[in-house]
Length: 121
Image (cartoon, rainbow, N blue to C red; front, side, top):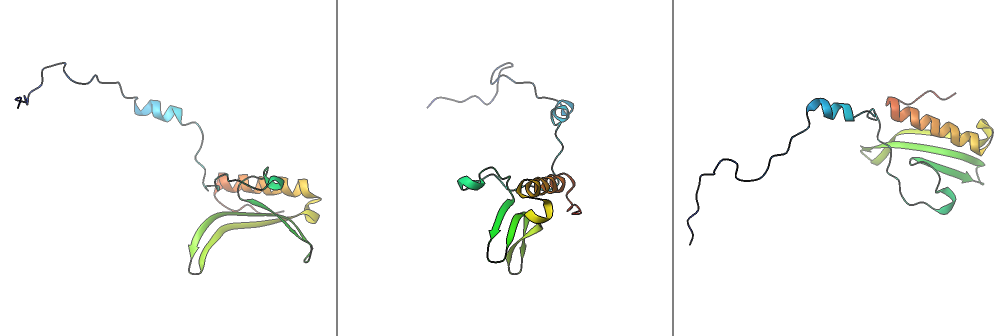
């Protein structure tokens, strides 16, 4: 077997690369960190593919319930997983489907930014 030397000569080995300084790393992070993590995007049916994650459409003819439900920030409870924040935006109370969806999206963005459930009007 060949004899292995335990000492290295100066300059031998891998080339060193310069590491970015801590100031450079802070300068790169320009976007503020969200207070609440939104759900990841997932595959949806074609009819609701355009909805943001966390927002679901509700259309129940039997109870005459039409609107959007926002559920975000699931947490563990003694009886299973429950959403931490929940809000309902009805079509009738907001003047139609589009205004109800706009209100739900605005509520979700405010929740993500502040970490607290905003007051509904």
